[in-house]
Image (cartoon, rainbow, N blue to C red):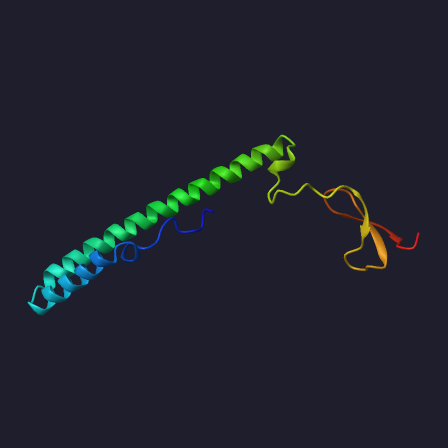
Length: 120
């Protein structure tokens, strides 16, 4: 699916590398290299934001392409091109959405004013 993550986070895929990075960060902070840790953290954050934006743009492009494809199918009358993959309701008499004891005529696009009792 387009909304699922493609893979697990880095620290779950590489726990040893992540633990070493945490240990190195703690060692640098204890030795007074606060500026270096801050610069590396800001650079990492900028790269993470950039990667996330690119992933979102790619996902949205895929969704737009799929919507455009289904729209073109619906313009050609192909039943696969209706959003939701269900064929449209055919015109005919159906139970009235407001009063289940009556039937109302559906013209294929909207409910009409024509009603009849359900017992007929």
